[in-house]
Length: 115
Image 1 (tube, one colour):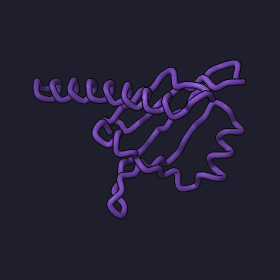
Image 2: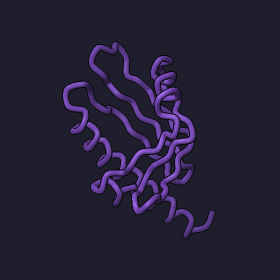
Image 3: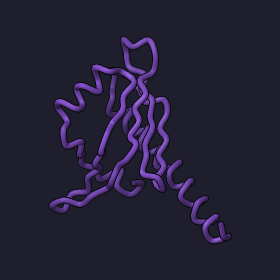
Image 4: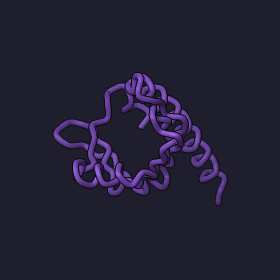
């Protein structure tokens, strides 16, 4: 790996870490009293996301893995699209598969700059 690749890799890692902090704060604000996000890792090079949530009523954190995602533009709207979502609670995976078939969500204006 050349010097330029190393610099670009460090830049991407820093950008991913900053994005994770901003997204975590935004999610925790939006979750209100139902819980909080305790960990978020974004790997923009490999297009993966891993997060953990502490939800009220749950004894252990819930782990969510997104092994592949894309940021897409549709009708002037920026969306994040997930091919698959793996969740450490089987019933939650069933809900996602049954009711969120497209797994596409609009990226709020405040978060577009970091994603």
